[in-house]
Length: 87
Image (cartoon, rainbow, N blue to C red; front, top):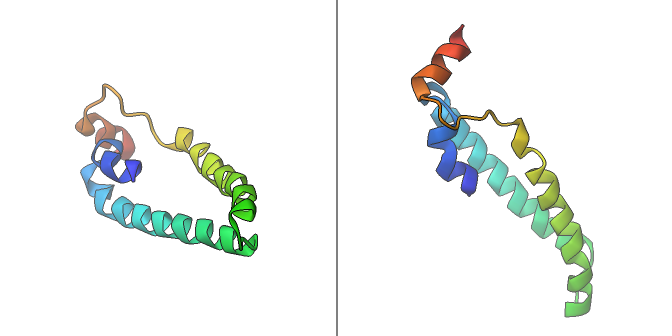
């Protein structure tokens, strides 16, 4: 959700629509896989759910580790980013 709201700052206008679609797909896959992990772990009561939460948290942590792969756009104009991409 955070990446979707920051997509206007992360990407140039020419790539924004494709990135929004990619964010939607990634967000949906993340939600489904998180629920699947809880189901696959066999949670039938609250004690088993408490053991499944760390497994799901590891998936979230893994996704957070991907954030440094996005380009840094702080204090840069979108025109500057677009020009450096086409050079």
